[in-house]
Length: 301
Length: 301
Image 1: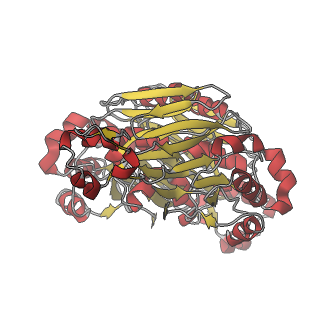
Image 2: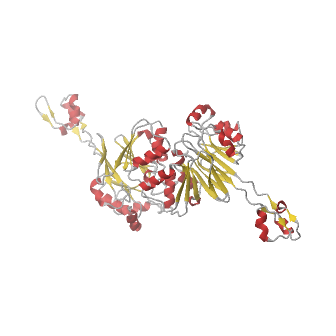
Protein backbone atom coordinates (compact mmCIF):
# COMPACT_ATOMS: atom_id res chain seq x y z
CA UNK A 1 0.00 0.00 0.00
CA UNK A 2 1.55 3.27 -1.10
CA UNK A 3 0.36 6.77 -0.27
CA UNK A 4 1.63 9.62 -2.45
CA UNK A 5 1.00 13.05 -1.05
CA UNK A 6 0.58 15.39 -4.04
CA UNK A 7 -0.30 18.41 -1.96
CA UNK A 8 -0.79 18.88 1.77
CA UNK A 9 -1.00 22.59 2.46
CA UNK A 10 -3.98 24.60 3.61
CA UNK A 11 -5.73 27.34 1.67
CA UNK A 12 -4.05 28.97 -1.35
CA UNK A 13 -1.71 27.31 -3.85
CA UNK A 14 1.83 28.70 -3.72
CA UNK A 15 5.02 27.97 -5.56
CA UNK A 16 6.07 25.23 -3.14
CA UNK A 17 2.80 24.57 -1.32
CA UNK A 18 0.07 22.69 -3.13
CA UNK A 19 -3.46 22.30 -1.77
CA UNK A 20 -4.78 18.88 -0.74
CA UNK A 21 -4.52 15.90 -3.05
CA UNK A 22 -3.10 12.42 -2.71
CA UNK A 23 -3.16 9.03 -4.37
CA UNK A 24 -3.46 5.67 -2.68
CA UNK A 25 -2.08 2.64 -4.47
CA UNK A 26 -3.90 -0.34 -2.96
CA UNK A 27 -4.50 -3.79 -4.41
CA UNK A 28 -4.02 -2.62 -7.97
CA UNK A 29 -6.18 0.49 -7.61
CA UNK A 30 -4.84 4.01 -7.86
CA UNK A 31 -7.38 6.05 -5.92
CA UNK A 32 -7.24 9.83 -6.07
CA UNK A 33 -8.26 11.56 -2.84
CA UNK A 34 -9.18 15.24 -3.07
CA UNK A 35 -8.10 17.32 -6.02
CA UNK A 36 -6.93 20.85 -5.22
CA UNK A 37 -5.76 23.21 -7.97
CA UNK A 38 -2.52 21.96 -9.49
CA UNK A 39 -3.21 18.25 -8.94
CA UNK A 40 -2.58 17.49 -12.63
CA UNK A 41 0.89 18.96 -12.50
CA UNK A 42 1.65 17.16 -9.22
CA UNK A 43 0.50 13.86 -10.76
CA UNK A 44 2.88 14.41 -13.65
CA UNK A 45 5.76 15.28 -11.33
CA UNK A 46 5.14 12.06 -9.40
CA UNK A 47 5.00 10.16 -12.70
CA UNK A 48 1.60 8.69 -11.86
CA UNK A 49 -0.35 7.56 -14.90
CA UNK A 50 -3.56 9.51 -15.41
CA UNK A 51 -5.23 6.51 -17.03
CA UNK A 52 -4.85 4.43 -13.86
CA UNK A 53 -7.20 6.73 -11.94
CA UNK A 54 -10.74 5.38 -12.06
CA UNK A 55 -12.09 6.58 -8.73
CA UNK A 56 -11.81 10.06 -7.24
CA UNK A 57 -12.91 10.74 -3.67
CA UNK A 58 -13.64 14.36 -2.71
CA UNK A 59 -13.90 15.15 1.00
CA UNK A 60 -15.69 18.49 0.76
CA UNK A 61 -16.37 21.39 -1.55
CA UNK A 62 -13.89 23.98 -0.34
CA UNK A 63 -11.75 25.14 -3.25
CA UNK A 64 -8.45 23.86 -1.87
CA UNK A 65 -9.87 20.33 -2.03
CA UNK A 66 -11.59 20.27 -5.43
CA UNK A 67 -10.77 23.23 -7.71
CA UNK A 68 -8.38 20.95 -9.64
CA UNK A 69 -11.20 18.55 -10.53
CA UNK A 70 -12.82 20.39 -13.48
CA UNK A 71 -9.43 20.61 -15.18
CA UNK A 72 -8.58 16.97 -14.51
CA UNK A 73 -11.94 15.80 -15.88
CA UNK A 74 -11.31 17.92 -19.00
CA UNK A 75 -7.76 16.65 -19.39
CA UNK A 76 -8.98 13.04 -19.32
CA UNK A 77 -11.10 13.95 -22.36
CA UNK A 78 -8.19 15.56 -24.18
CA UNK A 79 -6.08 12.48 -23.47
CA UNK A 80 -8.68 10.38 -25.27
CA UNK A 81 -9.88 8.52 -22.19
CA UNK A 82 -12.49 5.86 -22.83
CA UNK A 83 -12.65 4.20 -19.42
CA UNK A 84 -15.28 5.07 -16.83
CA UNK A 85 -14.49 7.64 -14.19
CA UNK A 86 -16.28 7.60 -10.82
CA UNK A 87 -16.35 10.69 -8.64
CA UNK A 88 -17.50 10.42 -5.01
CA UNK A 89 -18.24 13.65 -3.22
CA UNK A 90 -20.80 15.86 -1.47
CA UNK A 91 -24.11 16.67 -3.10
CA UNK A 92 -23.64 19.54 -5.52
CA UNK A 93 -20.44 18.23 -7.08
CA UNK A 94 -22.27 16.84 -10.11
CA UNK A 95 -24.05 20.08 -10.90
CA UNK A 96 -20.83 22.08 -10.50
CA UNK A 97 -18.68 19.95 -12.78
CA UNK A 98 -21.49 19.47 -15.28
CA UNK A 99 -22.10 23.21 -15.50
CA UNK A 100 -18.42 24.00 -16.08
CA UNK A 101 -18.16 21.42 -18.86
CA UNK A 102 -21.40 22.66 -20.40
CA UNK A 103 -20.21 26.28 -20.42
CA UNK A 104 -17.20 25.17 -22.46
CA UNK A 105 -19.36 22.94 -24.67
CA UNK A 106 -16.86 20.25 -23.72
CA UNK A 107 -18.75 17.22 -22.48
CA UNK A 108 -16.60 14.17 -21.79
CA UNK A 109 -16.40 11.41 -24.37
CA UNK A 110 -15.92 8.82 -21.61
CA UNK A 111 -18.53 7.70 -19.07
CA UNK A 112 -18.44 10.00 -16.04
CA UNK A 113 -20.40 8.92 -12.97
CA UNK A 114 -21.03 11.00 -9.89
CA UNK A 115 -21.82 9.37 -6.56
CA UNK A 116 -23.17 12.15 -4.40
CA UNK A 117 -22.87 11.76 -0.65
CA UNK A 118 -25.32 13.09 1.90
CA UNK A 119 -25.24 10.60 4.79
CA UNK A 120 -24.00 11.63 8.19
CA UNK A 121 -23.22 7.99 9.06
CA UNK A 122 -20.21 6.02 7.83
CA UNK A 123 -21.27 4.45 4.53
CA UNK A 124 -19.62 2.05 2.08
CA UNK A 125 -19.13 3.98 -1.18
CA UNK A 126 -17.02 1.53 -3.17
CA UNK A 127 -16.42 -2.20 -2.89
CA UNK A 128 -14.93 -4.92 -5.04
CA UNK A 129 -13.40 -8.31 -4.21
CA UNK A 130 -10.20 -6.77 -2.87
CA UNK A 131 -10.97 -3.39 -1.37
CA UNK A 132 -13.70 -1.54 0.49
CA UNK A 133 -13.97 2.24 0.79
CA UNK A 134 -16.22 3.86 3.42
CA UNK A 135 -16.84 7.43 4.47
CA UNK A 136 -15.65 8.84 7.78
CA UNK A 137 -18.09 11.60 8.76
CA UNK A 138 -16.01 14.61 9.78
CA UNK A 139 -16.93 17.83 11.50
CA UNK A 140 -15.99 20.90 9.44
CA UNK A 141 -17.64 24.16 8.41
CA UNK A 142 -19.43 22.43 5.53
CA UNK A 143 -20.47 18.80 4.92
CA UNK A 144 -17.23 16.80 4.90
CA UNK A 145 -16.23 13.15 4.77
CA UNK A 146 -12.92 11.44 5.31
CA UNK A 147 -12.42 8.10 3.61
CA UNK A 148 -11.41 4.70 5.01
CA UNK A 149 -9.69 2.35 2.57
CA UNK A 150 -9.60 -1.29 3.68
CA UNK A 151 -8.05 -4.26 1.96
CA UNK A 152 -10.19 -7.37 2.24
CA UNK A 153 -8.85 -10.56 3.80
CA UNK A 154 -6.81 -12.26 1.06
CA UNK A 155 -7.08 -15.99 0.37
CA UNK A 156 -4.78 -18.30 2.39
CA UNK A 157 -1.35 -19.15 0.97
CA UNK A 158 -0.86 -22.70 -0.22
CA UNK A 159 1.87 -24.73 1.56
CA UNK A 160 3.17 -26.39 -1.60
CA UNK A 161 5.25 -28.96 0.26
CA UNK A 162 2.35 -30.01 2.48
CA UNK A 163 -0.18 -30.44 -0.36
CA UNK A 164 2.45 -32.40 -2.32
CA UNK A 165 3.15 -34.71 0.63
CA UNK A 166 -0.57 -35.61 0.84
CA UNK A 167 -0.68 -35.98 -2.98
CA UNK A 168 -3.72 -33.65 -3.15
CA UNK A 169 -5.00 -33.01 -6.66
CA UNK A 170 -4.59 -29.47 -8.05
CA UNK A 171 -8.34 -29.12 -8.52
CA UNK A 172 -8.68 -28.78 -4.73
CA UNK A 173 -6.14 -25.94 -4.44
CA UNK A 174 -8.65 -23.11 -4.71
CA UNK A 175 -10.84 -24.78 -2.08
CA UNK A 176 -7.81 -25.04 0.23
CA UNK A 177 -6.86 -21.41 -0.40
CA UNK A 178 -10.43 -20.52 0.57
CA UNK A 179 -9.79 -22.16 4.00
CA UNK A 180 -11.46 -25.57 3.59
CA UNK A 181 -10.16 -28.76 5.23
CA UNK A 182 -9.49 -31.73 2.92
CA UNK A 183 -10.83 -35.30 3.24
CA UNK A 184 -8.31 -37.74 1.80
CA UNK A 185 -9.30 -40.94 -0.08
CA UNK A 186 -8.49 -42.76 3.15
CA UNK A 187 -11.21 -40.76 4.87
CA UNK A 188 -8.69 -38.90 7.04
CA UNK A 189 -9.30 -35.18 7.46
CA UNK A 190 -6.36 -32.80 6.91
CA UNK A 191 -7.08 -29.53 8.67
CA UNK A 192 -6.62 -26.46 6.50
CA UNK A 193 -3.95 -24.93 8.76
CA UNK A 194 -1.64 -27.89 7.88
CA UNK A 195 -1.98 -27.05 4.18
CA UNK A 196 -1.78 -23.28 4.22
CA UNK A 197 -0.01 -20.26 5.63
CA UNK A 198 -1.79 -17.21 6.96
CA UNK A 199 -2.24 -14.53 4.30
CA UNK A 200 -0.72 -11.12 4.92
CA UNK A 201 -2.82 -9.00 7.30
CA UNK A 202 -5.16 -6.75 5.27
CA UNK A 203 -4.00 -3.16 5.27
CA UNK A 204 -6.03 -0.07 5.85
CA UNK A 205 -5.66 3.68 5.45
CA UNK A 206 -7.78 6.52 6.79
CA UNK A 207 -7.84 10.01 5.26
CA UNK A 208 -9.22 12.69 7.58
CA UNK A 209 -9.21 16.26 6.28
CA UNK A 210 -10.66 18.80 7.12
CA UNK A 211 -12.07 18.45 10.62
CA UNK A 212 -12.18 19.88 14.07
CA UNK A 213 -11.00 17.51 16.86
CA UNK A 214 -13.67 14.82 16.58
CA UNK A 215 -13.18 11.72 18.77
CA UNK A 216 -16.37 10.14 17.42
CA UNK A 217 -14.33 9.01 14.39
CA UNK A 218 -12.07 6.84 16.58
CA UNK A 219 -14.19 3.63 16.41
CA UNK A 220 -14.33 3.93 12.57
CA UNK A 221 -10.58 4.24 12.09
CA UNK A 222 -9.51 1.93 14.96
CA UNK A 223 -6.25 0.13 14.22
CA UNK A 224 -5.67 1.38 10.67
CA UNK A 225 -2.10 0.99 9.44
CA UNK A 226 -1.87 4.65 8.53
CA UNK A 227 -3.94 7.68 9.42
CA UNK A 228 -3.63 10.96 7.55
CA UNK A 229 -5.07 13.58 9.85
CA UNK A 230 -5.11 17.28 9.19
CA UNK A 231 -3.06 19.48 11.50
CA UNK A 232 -3.70 23.00 10.29
CA UNK A 233 -2.51 24.62 13.50
CA UNK A 234 -0.27 24.12 16.51
CA UNK A 235 -1.62 23.92 20.05
CA UNK A 236 -0.81 27.62 20.53
CA UNK A 237 -3.64 28.34 18.03
CA UNK A 238 -6.05 25.76 19.51
CA UNK A 239 -8.78 28.34 19.88
CA UNK A 240 -8.48 29.40 16.23
CA UNK A 241 -8.53 25.71 15.26
CA UNK A 242 -11.84 25.21 17.07
CA UNK A 243 -13.29 28.39 15.61
CA UNK A 244 -12.39 27.48 12.01
CA UNK A 245 -13.18 23.79 12.59
CA UNK A 246 -9.66 22.59 12.03
CA UNK A 247 -7.30 20.53 14.22
CA UNK A 248 -3.96 21.06 15.90
CA UNK A 249 -1.03 18.67 15.64
CA UNK A 250 -1.64 17.66 19.25
CA UNK A 251 -5.29 16.86 18.53
CA UNK A 252 -4.36 14.84 15.42
CA UNK A 253 -1.94 12.83 17.58
CA UNK A 254 -4.60 12.32 20.25
CA UNK A 255 -6.93 10.81 17.65
CA UNK A 256 -4.05 8.62 16.41
CA UNK A 257 -3.37 7.43 19.96
CA UNK A 258 -7.00 6.76 20.81
CA UNK A 259 -7.45 4.82 17.55
CA UNK A 260 -4.18 2.96 18.08
CA UNK A 261 -3.11 3.44 14.47
CA UNK A 262 0.13 2.16 12.94
CA UNK A 263 1.42 5.56 11.87
CA UNK A 264 0.17 9.14 11.74
CA UNK A 265 0.77 11.28 8.66
CA UNK A 266 0.26 15.00 9.16
CA UNK A 267 -0.75 17.63 6.62
CA UNK A 268 -2.96 20.63 5.75
CA UNK A 269 -0.44 22.92 7.40
CA UNK A 270 -1.23 26.59 7.70
CA UNK A 271 1.47 28.68 6.01
CA UNK A 272 1.83 30.83 9.15
CA UNK A 273 4.47 28.53 10.65
CA UNK A 274 8.15 28.62 9.77
CA UNK A 275 8.75 24.88 9.74
CA UNK A 276 6.56 21.80 9.45
CA UNK A 277 8.89 20.14 11.97
CA UNK A 278 7.02 22.05 14.66
CA UNK A 279 3.94 19.93 13.85
CA UNK A 280 5.96 16.72 14.16
CA UNK A 281 7.49 17.73 17.47
CA UNK A 282 4.13 18.63 18.96
CA UNK A 283 2.44 15.45 17.75
CA UNK A 284 5.28 13.20 18.95
CA UNK A 285 4.67 14.30 22.51
CA UNK A 286 1.40 12.36 22.29
CA UNK A 287 1.98 9.61 19.72
CA UNK A 288 4.66 7.94 17.59
CA UNK A 289 5.47 7.34 14.80
CA UNK A 290 4.57 10.65 13.22
CA UNK A 291 5.35 11.20 9.54
CA UNK A 292 5.30 14.62 7.93
CA UNK A 293 3.25 14.84 4.77
CA UNK A 294 5.21 16.66 2.08
CA UNK A 295 4.19 17.55 -1.48
CA UNK A 296 5.43 14.82 -3.82
CA UNK A 297 6.46 12.42 -1.04
CA UNK A 298 5.48 8.74 -1.16
CA UNK A 299 4.98 6.53 1.91
CA UNK A 300 4.93 2.74 1.87
CA UNK A 301 2.88 0.91 4.48
CA UNK B 1 3.56 49.02 -21.18
CA UNK B 2 4.65 45.61 -19.95
CA UNK B 3 3.16 42.26 -20.87
CA UNK B 4 3.93 39.31 -18.60
CA UNK B 5 3.05 35.95 -20.06
CA UNK B 6 2.13 33.69 -17.13
CA UNK B 7 1.10 30.75 -19.28
CA UNK B 8 0.89 30.32 -23.04
CA UNK B 9 0.36 26.67 -23.76
CA UNK B 10 -2.73 24.98 -25.17
CA UNK B 11 -4.91 22.47 -23.39
CA UNK B 12 -3.70 20.66 -20.25
CA UNK B 13 -1.41 22.09 -17.56
CA UNK B 14 1.96 20.32 -17.40
CA UNK B 15 5.05 20.72 -15.28
CA UNK B 16 6.58 23.30 -17.60
CA UNK B 17 3.58 24.31 -19.68
CA UNK B 18 0.91 26.48 -18.11
CA UNK B 19 -2.41 27.24 -19.76
CA UNK B 20 -3.27 30.77 -20.88
CA UNK B 21 -2.89 33.72 -18.55
CA UNK B 22 -1.08 37.02 -18.76
CA UNK B 23 -0.91 40.41 -17.11
CA UNK B 24 -0.71 43.78 -18.81
CA UNK B 25 0.85 46.67 -16.90
CA UNK B 26 -0.51 49.79 -18.55
CA UNK B 27 -0.87 53.32 -17.16
CA UNK B 28 -0.80 52.12 -13.57
CA UNK B 29 -3.26 49.27 -14.11
CA UNK B 30 -2.34 45.62 -13.75
CA UNK B 31 -4.91 43.85 -15.90
CA UNK B 32 -5.19 40.07 -15.75
CA UNK B 33 -6.11 38.45 -19.06
CA UNK B 34 -7.43 34.88 -18.92
CA UNK B 35 -6.83 32.72 -15.90
CA UNK B 36 -5.99 29.08 -16.61
CA UNK B 37 -5.33 26.63 -13.79
CA UNK B 38 -2.11 27.52 -11.98
CA UNK B 39 -2.34 31.28 -12.58
CA UNK B 40 -1.96 32.00 -8.85
CA UNK B 41 1.35 30.16 -8.69
CA UNK B 42 2.56 31.84 -11.88
CA UNK B 43 1.65 35.26 -10.44
CA UNK B 44 3.70 34.47 -7.36
CA UNK B 45 6.65 33.27 -9.44
CA UNK B 46 6.56 36.53 -11.39
CA UNK B 47 6.35 38.45 -8.09
CA UNK B 48 3.21 40.29 -9.23
CA UNK B 49 1.16 41.64 -6.35
CA UNK B 50 -2.30 40.06 -6.14
CA UNK B 51 -3.75 43.22 -4.64
CA UNK B 52 -2.89 45.23 -7.78
CA UNK B 53 -5.31 43.20 -9.88
CA UNK B 54 -8.67 44.91 -10.05
CA UNK B 55 -9.87 43.85 -13.50
CA UNK B 56 -9.84 40.36 -14.97
CA UNK B 57 -10.70 39.77 -18.63
CA UNK B 58 -11.72 36.25 -19.65
CA UNK B 59 -11.76 35.47 -23.38
CA UNK B 60 -13.92 32.34 -23.30
CA UNK B 61 -15.10 29.55 -21.05
CA UNK B 62 -12.81 26.70 -22.07
CA UNK B 63 -11.06 25.33 -19.00
CA UNK B 64 -7.54 26.24 -20.09
CA UNK B 65 -8.59 29.91 -20.03
CA UNK B 66 -10.57 30.17 -16.79
CA UNK B 67 -10.26 27.16 -14.47
CA UNK B 68 -7.82 29.16 -12.33
CA UNK B 69 -10.42 31.86 -11.69
CA UNK B 70 -12.48 30.24 -8.88
CA UNK B 71 -9.28 29.65 -6.91
CA UNK B 72 -7.99 33.16 -7.48
CA UNK B 73 -11.31 34.70 -6.41
CA UNK B 74 -11.18 32.54 -3.23
CA UNK B 75 -7.56 33.42 -2.55
CA UNK B 76 -8.36 37.14 -2.71
CA UNK B 77 -10.83 36.49 0.12
CA UNK B 78 -8.27 34.56 2.18
CA UNK B 79 -5.78 37.39 1.68
CA UNK B 80 -8.29 39.77 3.26
CA UNK B 81 -9.01 41.74 0.10
CA UNK B 82 -11.38 44.67 0.53
CA UNK B 83 -11.06 46.33 -2.87
CA UNK B 84 -13.53 45.74 -5.67
CA UNK B 85 -12.82 43.08 -8.27
CA UNK B 86 -14.29 43.30 -11.75
CA UNK B 87 -14.52 40.23 -13.97
CA UNK B 88 -15.32 40.60 -17.67
CA UNK B 89 -16.25 37.44 -19.54
CA UNK B 90 -18.87 35.53 -21.51
CA UNK B 91 -22.37 35.10 -20.15
CA UNK B 92 -22.41 32.19 -17.72
CA UNK B 93 -19.24 33.16 -15.89
CA UNK B 94 -21.16 34.75 -13.02
CA UNK B 95 -23.33 31.73 -12.39
CA UNK B 96 -20.32 29.40 -12.53
CA UNK B 97 -18.16 31.29 -10.06
CA UNK B 98 -21.11 32.10 -7.81
CA UNK B 99 -22.13 28.45 -7.65
CA UNK B 100 -18.62 27.26 -6.77
CA UNK B 101 -18.32 29.79 -3.97
CA UNK B 102 -21.79 28.94 -2.70
CA UNK B 103 -21.01 25.21 -2.61
CA UNK B 104 -18.09 25.97 -0.31
CA UNK B 105 -20.18 28.44 1.71
CA UNK B 106 -17.33 30.85 0.99
CA UNK B 107 -18.77 34.05 -0.40
CA UNK B 108 -16.24 36.85 -0.89
CA UNK B 109 -15.98 39.59 1.71
CA UNK B 110 -14.98 42.10 -0.99
CA UNK B 111 -17.23 43.49 -3.74
CA UNK B 112 -17.14 41.18 -6.75
CA UNK B 113 -18.69 42.44 -9.98
CA UNK B 114 -19.29 40.43 -13.11
CA UNK B 115 -19.60 42.12 -16.49
CA UNK B 116 -21.06 39.49 -18.77
CA UNK B 117 -20.41 39.81 -22.48
CA UNK B 118 -22.76 38.73 -25.23
CA UNK B 119 -22.18 41.18 -28.09
CA UNK B 120 -20.77 40.00 -31.39
CA UNK B 121 -19.53 43.51 -32.16
CA UNK B 122 -16.45 45.17 -30.69
CA UNK B 123 -17.60 46.87 -27.49
CA UNK B 124 -15.92 49.10 -24.91
CA UNK B 125 -15.92 47.15 -21.64
CA UNK B 126 -13.74 49.38 -19.47
CA UNK B 127 -12.71 53.01 -19.68
CA UNK B 128 -11.14 55.57 -17.40
CA UNK B 129 -9.18 58.77 -18.09
CA UNK B 130 -6.06 56.88 -19.16
CA UNK B 131 -7.05 53.57 -20.72
CA UNK B 132 -9.81 52.03 -22.81
CA UNK B 133 -10.47 48.29 -23.14
CA UNK B 134 -12.62 46.91 -25.95
CA UNK B 135 -13.55 43.43 -27.06
CA UNK B 136 -12.24 41.87 -30.25
CA UNK B 137 -14.89 39.39 -31.45
CA UNK B 138 -13.05 36.18 -32.29
CA UNK B 139 -14.15 33.04 -34.10
CA UNK B 140 -13.73 29.93 -31.97
CA UNK B 141 -15.81 26.87 -31.09
CA UNK B 142 -17.64 28.81 -28.38
CA UNK B 143 -18.33 32.53 -27.85
CA UNK B 144 -14.92 34.17 -27.55
CA UNK B 145 -13.53 37.69 -27.33
CA UNK B 146 -10.04 39.00 -27.60
CA UNK B 147 -9.32 42.29 -25.84
CA UNK B 148 -7.83 45.53 -27.13
CA UNK B 149 -6.08 47.72 -24.56
CA UNK B 150 -5.51 51.32 -25.65
CA UNK B 151 -3.81 54.11 -23.80
CA UNK B 152 -5.56 57.42 -24.25
CA UNK B 153 -3.76 60.43 -25.69
CA UNK B 154 -1.80 61.90 -22.77
CA UNK B 155 -1.72 65.64 -22.08
CA UNK B 156 0.96 67.65 -23.91
CA UNK B 157 4.32 68.16 -22.20
CA UNK B 158 5.07 71.66 -20.98
CA UNK B 159 8.11 73.36 -22.53
CA UNK B 160 9.33 74.93 -19.29
CA UNK B 161 11.80 77.24 -20.98
CA UNK B 162 9.19 78.58 -23.41
CA UNK B 163 6.52 79.32 -20.79
CA UNK B 164 9.17 81.01 -18.64
CA UNK B 165 10.33 83.20 -21.51
CA UNK B 166 6.74 84.45 -22.01
CA UNK B 167 6.36 84.86 -18.22
CA UNK B 168 3.11 82.88 -18.27
CA UNK B 169 1.49 82.40 -14.88
CA UNK B 170 1.43 78.87 -13.43
CA UNK B 171 -2.36 78.87 -13.29
CA UNK B 172 -2.42 78.53 -17.11
CA UNK B 173 -0.15 75.46 -17.19
CA UNK B 174 -2.97 72.89 -17.13
CA UNK B 175 -4.76 74.75 -19.93
CA UNK B 176 -1.55 74.70 -21.98
CA UNK B 177 -1.03 70.97 -21.30
CA UNK B 178 -4.59 70.47 -22.55
CA UNK B 179 -3.50 72.02 -25.88
CA UNK B 180 -4.85 75.56 -25.60
CA UNK B 181 -3.11 78.61 -27.14
CA UNK B 182 -2.35 81.53 -24.80
CA UNK B 183 -3.28 85.20 -25.21
CA UNK B 184 -0.64 87.40 -23.60
CA UNK B 185 -1.45 90.67 -21.78
CA UNK B 186 -0.17 92.40 -24.94
CA UNK B 187 -2.95 90.71 -26.89
CA UNK B 188 -0.49 88.54 -28.82
CA UNK B 189 -1.44 84.87 -29.28
CA UNK B 190 1.20 82.22 -28.51
CA UNK B 191 0.28 79.01 -30.33
CA UNK B 192 0.28 75.92 -28.13
CA UNK B 193 2.95 74.14 -30.19
CA UNK B 194 5.45 76.82 -29.10
CA UNK B 195 4.74 76.06 -25.44
CA UNK B 196 4.58 72.28 -25.46
CA UNK B 197 6.16 69.10 -26.74
CA UNK B 198 4.18 66.26 -28.24
CA UNK B 199 3.23 63.66 -25.61
CA UNK B 200 4.44 60.11 -26.11
CA UNK B 201 2.36 58.21 -28.66
CA UNK B 202 -0.38 56.25 -26.84
CA UNK B 203 0.38 52.55 -26.75
CA UNK B 204 -1.93 49.70 -27.50
CA UNK B 205 -1.99 45.93 -27.09
CA UNK B 206 -4.29 43.34 -28.62
CA UNK B 207 -4.85 39.89 -27.11
CA UNK B 208 -6.31 37.35 -29.54
CA UNK B 209 -6.82 33.82 -28.26
CA UNK B 210 -8.45 31.44 -29.20
CA UNK B 211 -9.49 31.92 -32.80
CA UNK B 212 -9.46 30.48 -36.26
CA UNK B 213 -7.81 32.70 -38.94
CA UNK B 214 -10.18 35.66 -38.88
CA UNK B 215 -9.16 38.68 -41.02
CA UNK B 216 -12.29 40.57 -39.93
CA UNK B 217 -10.39 41.53 -36.75
CA UNK B 218 -7.73 43.42 -38.73
CA UNK B 219 -9.51 46.83 -38.72
CA UNK B 220 -10.00 46.58 -34.94
CA UNK B 221 -6.35 45.86 -34.13
CA UNK B 222 -4.82 48.03 -36.88
CA UNK B 223 -1.45 49.46 -35.88
CA UNK B 224 -1.30 48.18 -32.29
CA UNK B 225 2.16 48.21 -30.76
CA UNK B 226 1.91 44.55 -29.84
CA UNK B 227 -0.39 41.76 -30.91
CA UNK B 228 -0.58 38.48 -29.03
CA UNK B 229 -2.10 36.00 -31.46
CA UNK B 230 -2.61 32.35 -30.80
CA UNK B 231 -0.60 29.92 -32.92
CA UNK B 232 -1.72 26.51 -31.78
CA UNK B 233 -0.44 24.73 -34.88
CA UNK B 234 2.07 24.96 -37.68
CA UNK B 235 1.07 25.25 -41.32
CA UNK B 236 1.51 21.49 -41.72
CA UNK B 237 -1.58 21.12 -39.49
CA UNK B 238 -3.57 23.93 -41.16
CA UNK B 239 -6.53 21.65 -41.76
CA UNK B 240 -6.64 20.62 -38.10
CA UNK B 241 -6.38 24.28 -37.12
CA UNK B 242 -9.44 25.12 -39.21
CA UNK B 243 -11.34 22.12 -37.89
CA UNK B 244 -10.67 22.97 -34.23
CA UNK B 245 -11.01 26.72 -34.88
CA UNK B 246 -7.42 27.53 -34.03
CA UNK B 247 -4.69 29.31 -36.00
CA UNK B 248 -1.30 28.41 -37.39
CA UNK B 249 1.85 30.48 -36.88
CA UNK B 250 1.64 31.51 -40.52
CA UNK B 251 -1.93 32.72 -40.12
CA UNK B 252 -1.05 34.66 -36.95
CA UNK B 253 1.74 36.37 -38.88
CA UNK B 254 -0.62 37.13 -41.76
CA UNK B 255 -2.98 38.91 -39.36
CA UNK B 256 0.00 40.79 -37.88
CA UNK B 257 1.10 41.86 -41.36
CA UNK B 258 -2.35 42.92 -42.51
CA UNK B 259 -2.86 44.93 -39.30
CA UNK B 260 0.62 46.41 -39.56
CA UNK B 261 1.32 45.84 -35.86
CA UNK B 262 4.54 46.76 -34.06
CA UNK B 263 5.35 43.26 -32.89
CA UNK B 264 3.73 39.84 -32.88
CA UNK B 265 3.84 37.67 -29.76
CA UNK B 266 2.97 34.02 -30.31
CA UNK B 267 1.47 31.54 -27.86
CA UNK B 268 -1.11 28.80 -27.19
CA UNK B 269 1.27 26.24 -28.63
CA UNK B 270 0.11 22.67 -29.01
CA UNK B 271 2.41 20.32 -27.10
CA UNK B 272 2.81 18.12 -30.17
CA UNK B 273 5.81 20.10 -31.45
CA UNK B 274 9.38 19.62 -30.25
CA UNK B 275 10.35 23.27 -30.18
CA UNK B 276 8.50 26.57 -30.08
CA UNK B 277 11.20 27.95 -32.38
CA UNK B 278 9.38 26.24 -35.22
CA UNK B 279 6.48 28.69 -34.68
CA UNK B 280 8.85 31.65 -34.79
CA UNK B 281 10.55 30.46 -37.98
CA UNK B 282 7.23 29.91 -39.74
CA UNK B 283 5.81 33.28 -38.67
CA UNK B 284 8.97 35.18 -39.62
CA UNK B 285 8.55 34.12 -43.24
CA UNK B 286 5.49 36.41 -43.29
CA UNK B 287 6.14 39.10 -40.66
CA UNK B 288 8.79 40.49 -38.33
CA UNK B 289 9.43 41.05 -35.48
CA UNK B 290 8.05 37.85 -33.97
CA UNK B 291 8.45 37.25 -30.24
CA UNK B 292 7.90 33.88 -28.65
CA UNK B 293 5.57 33.88 -25.68
CA UNK B 294 7.11 31.89 -22.85
CA UNK B 295 5.70 31.14 -19.38
CA UNK B 296 7.01 33.72 -16.94
CA UNK B 297 8.52 35.98 -19.62
CA UNK B 298 7.95 39.75 -19.57
CA UNK B 299 7.95 41.98 -22.66
CA UNK B 300 8.30 45.74 -22.63
CA UNK B 301 6.69 47.77 -25.40
